[in-house]
Image (tube, rainbow, N blue to C red):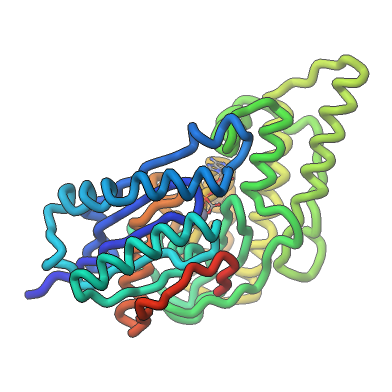
Length: 335
Ligand code: KG4
Ligand code: ZN
C-alpha cells in the first residue's frame, strides 16, 4: 500500500521549518530552525534578516527532515507550503523551495493558509470533528473561526486592533523582557495576583470581536505613571493582571460563540494557545458545554512549525487543492 507522505514547508515569519507528515496525522519529522536570537536585539522580527536566514537554512532543513523521517523524494505524495499570511520575503523562500522540489520530483504542489495550518496542529491530538469552532490566537491574528466541514473556514469574530500575542509582546517590551515575551509573562503570571483590574474590552457587546489595544494602553500608562512618581510596581502582579484580562476576554467571547453555534469541537490553536492560563480557563468553562470536546494544539505545535502545514496540506490535497509552478506568496492571504 502506498504511503501518504507530505513534505511541508513553513517560512512565514522567523522560523524556517520543514516537516514530513504521514496521513495528515503522524509527524515523522519536524525540523525547526529558529532565528529569534538574530531578531531579539531589534525588539521584533526584521523582515530582511528573516528572509536571509530562511535562504541559508532551508536546504539543510529539507535534508534533515527527510533523513529523520527515513524517506526519500520518491516516497512522497505531495509538497505543501505556507502561501500566506506572513512576511512576503520570508514566504517567498518557502514557496520557491517547495516549487523547486515539486518540479524536480514531479510532485503535486499544495498551497496552505498559515492560519489553517495552526488549526490543524490540533489534529495531532485527535481527529477533528465538524462542525467546529477554532479559537486562533497568534502574534498576528486573533480570530474565532467556524468550520462547517474539514476544509471550510468562516471568520465569525476577530480583533479590531492588536492580536493577543502582539499585546503580550508589546507589554513585554515595557517590562524589559526579550522578544517574544508571551512565554515569560505567562510564567511570571503564575506567581502573582490580579491587583490592577485592567479593562476587559467588548465583553458585553453582542459580537465575537476582540480589542486589545485599550488593555495595552492601560498597562503602559500604569507603568509610566509609576515610573514618574518613582513607585515600584510588583512585576508578577502586573503580569497576572494583564494575563487575566486577556484570558477572560478570550474565554468569554469563545463561550458566547459556543452558546450560539452548536458544534462538536472547540479547537484551540496558534502561538498564544500555549498560554497556561488560557488552557486552564477553557478546560474550566467547557464543563458548561458537555457535548463540546476541547481539542488543544499540543504545546510543541502551538508556535510556527511545518508539521501543522503538513497536516492541513494533507486535507487540502485530499480535497483536490493544487497550485501550479506560478504559485506566488500572498502576505495578506485570508481564509
Ligand atoms: O503562532 P505564532 O508562533 O506566530 C504567529 O503566527 O504569529 O505566535 C507567536 C506569538 C508571540 O506573540 C508570542 O509572544 C506568543 O505567541 N506566545 C505566547 C505564549 N507562547 C507564545 N503568548 C502567551 N502565552 C504563552 N505561553
Ligand atoms: Zn503562526
